[in-house]
Image 1 (cartoon, rainbow, N blue to C red):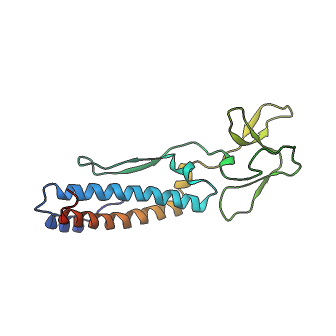
Image 2 (image 1 turned 120 degrees about the vertical axis):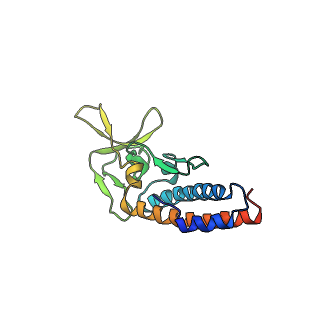
Image 3 (image 1 turned 120 degrees about the horizontal axis):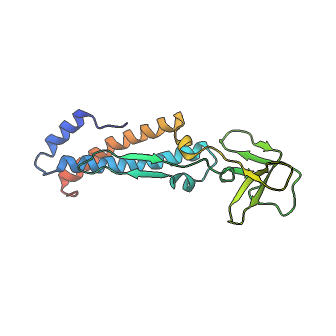
Amino acid sequence: MITIDAEQIKRAELLLKNIPGGIDKAIVRAINRSVESAQTAAVKKVKDRYYIKAGDVRKTIKIKKANYSDRIAIIRATGSPVALSKFSVTPSKPPKKRRKTPVKVRVLKGESPKSLTHAFVTRLSSGHIGVFERVGKARYPIKQFYGPSVPQMLGHDSVVKYVEERAKEQLIKRFDHEIERLLRGAGK
């Protein structure tokens, strides 16, 4: 949890005492801007750590912004495990001929590719391309391989620490900026 220091609030109250509702405006605006930058930092850090597209991460994140009655902003990520095909897979598309070499997959950046000897890449009738494996000797059923979910990726210690540091920095910076805006008369 990121908070504004009590001394900062006292200082802001002194500076904004002649502006009606000034302290509330400054706090809410600063919180909302910092939560947006925290989302951006989270997407960036996950993308730096995993072979996944930023859009696949961003679409699972929801933000509840702060308002004057509730000065709390929340970033929440929901989702189930991500299809392995959303990470680094070779081949990335279904081959025209049956392959003799195994499918190679990388989820974490910096790790060597893992070979899935009995897996294959195919396109389903829905258009989804995935990495699958047959369950038995028969042609069907098949099961799809999955990687970690976005909430799991965001929950990694290095990601959490990075996002909290960026959010705290941004909150302090934005709070000062919003106070200055209100004092100049630009943020009424």
